[in-house]
Image 1: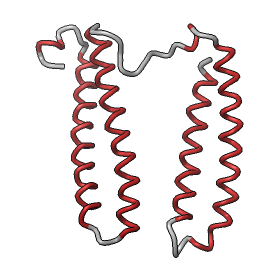
Image 2: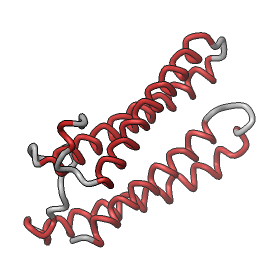
Image 3: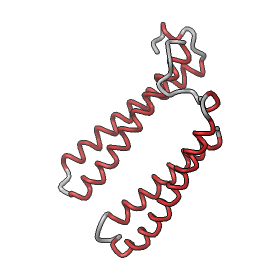
Length: 155
């Protein structure tokens, strides 16, 4: 949002937009730093892990950009936001609830499997990345469950 284009935006919206776009710039700098490190390290393990971090940072950058675009579209009435409004109440809530229930069950099964695998791989934690990767997958599964619980709570 430029100064001229923000005439209809509230102070809060302008400040939030500035915060989001500043964060996008910081994320870009961090992404460049990670990329430089990945290119120069001689450690294959470190390069692999930094690659995982780069993937996350790219996703974070995209989400912040979508939030900024959504805020701009909403504040200035310039179109549909990049991140949709919650619309669960306007669609077949029963099918969403059923799908969410099935997905939650699958994610909970996955969480149990990851926990079992984590215990099984504990002896390798000082010689491979596997224990760490299973730990990260457990965290991803917890994130998936949080997303599905959000859907469950809002349908």
